[in-house]
Length: 436
Image 1: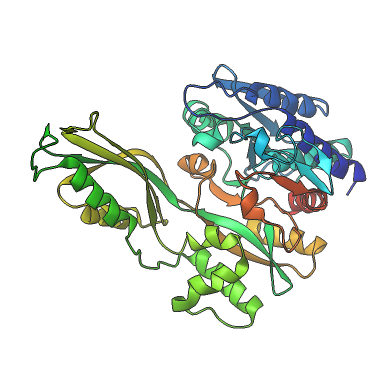
Image 2: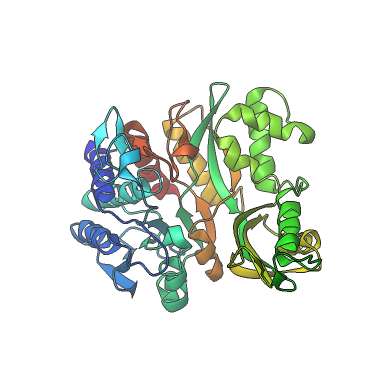
């Protein structure tokens, strides 16, 4: 691979981090998304790729470009390559370096978005630009999309694009995005985890109604008491293990690396040996739900009529009804549930020509690599693309140092990406475009 492309991936990552694209949620304008989008469009224009800049609201900006150079097989459906430009906020006084400095030091690029996910935005830009300059077409047409608002679920980014301009990506059948393709070292063996599934998301409100009254009197119909009991039961649910095929594939690979199959009754114990990634992988062993907010009352001596709680539920693919039925059963008949926001679960096939292309590209640059599927406990823009029937995968191929806390980088303090990992990603992703 051209050394210039590797250098560009590093410099682009640094440049993109310097745009403060913090996403503060609904009601905020996403301060730097427009600036980052214009930067990306300019880098594409430099090599003759025209990009559309679209806004769901002022400065909530998404970039879309079609890349179909001479030599690619236009009889094949386009591949969607997507990244997001927004990041979660960062408190500068908690960091070793300024979170929007994009500083390159000690073999890392530092700053908010270095892992989530301006690194892949930069890698995709660097690889595409190099291939244009050297007249190397991808195997099939490509749609490049850099979205706003992913960190808030995408209503002003991918979701908005799918529902208002589906024609821009609807001819794609497969997509490549974040949180997959990274390495995990187990017993000196590197496993590369390809994300093929995501849990569904259900944020819900729990509502208890009782009889209002004076705080000095007995009250057997107290909404606060009823809600508290329901929230406690919900927080203490022991969800049964439900192994999704992607999870089973991951456990099989880990078991092989450890030299012994992982028994179902010892999975949690085994996962703790993997370090911080156990938090993410362990959460995909079953449904999960966590009460996160409580609200009741307005005065110390007034028993309120209403008490509410908010909970974050995540359900396994194909098991939505089972999850919601269990929640209703646990909270009881005196508390009702309302879904505030829901995003569907995601599933894509393993063992396809596309996943084989990923594995082949990785092994060319890391011959000892072992490639396995896994399921993500959180969510990405893949949930939006799935509305169009697009099969979505997480594939940002990073060869990471064995002790690197990859999971801790997501939304964490001192987020950073190894320079060598970016360079590896450029090599692998370039090769992948020959095969995909």
